[in-house]
Length: 262
Ligand code: NAD
Figure 1 (cartoon, protein in one colour):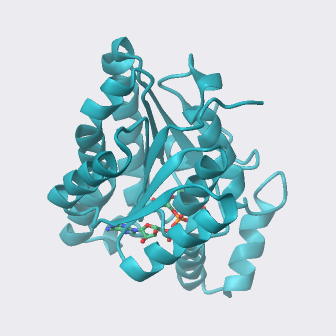
Figure 2: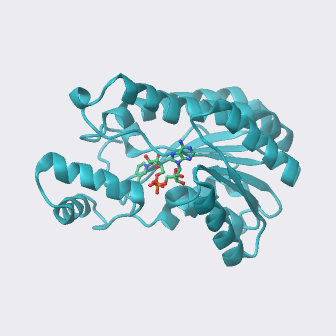
């Protein structure tokens, strides 16, 4: 299937590793010019180089601290300076800290509001004039299955991700007249560094080993395994594509069939 993405420009936030990097790779493989943004400049540059080598595409690394609104604006401006336009925004971030209500303090809440909710708002705000100019703009936010049902031990995700669904639904309505679609992809459990950190936290909380925590997670998934980052990236590439031109305001669960909620 031709996704119709060739020659267009994508900005992928938090893309030096994990799900963001896989998304950048998939979009580059479809012929897009891609900016990867994240903190940690050395890893980011290596990621951009690795993707460019694999796809033969144009991939630019732009260092960006997502807790800093001015840095987000600068990164989007750098994208448009480099490639002349912006068609696809993949809004991603490091994810809120794990823990239940009594384990989380004021600082954790502020970090989650800033890092998960406001960073998404700021990315969209900075990208919006360029997505409008594109006439076929796409916003795809990486969220979580906590958009559908709460995940034990991830209270901040359970609060922030549904807020992002509200944001996406509303934006889909407000920006539809500009030809912009707004969707979010909700990963279940994917084999990334973030998942390792979550499994470590689960193991500590339940007094089990990380191997046991991983086995329990795998057993909870109908497909019997964690997801591979490229499996989420494929869903993102579809939503970014011309083939998804009439899909907007949706939450697409990519979770191996685990989430029970309709
Ligand atoms: P990861 O730890 O593998 O990668 C995180 C990326 O975010 C890195 O590129 C890192 O540099 C960047 N980053 C983190 N904080 C940043 C900041 N303040 N400024 C700039 N860049 C920052 O994580 P991942 O597994 O790819 O997860 C990505 C997102 O998806 C997270 O929000 C996570 O909560 C969510 N998610 C992941 C899973 C999963 O199974 N991996 C499941 C549900 C939701």
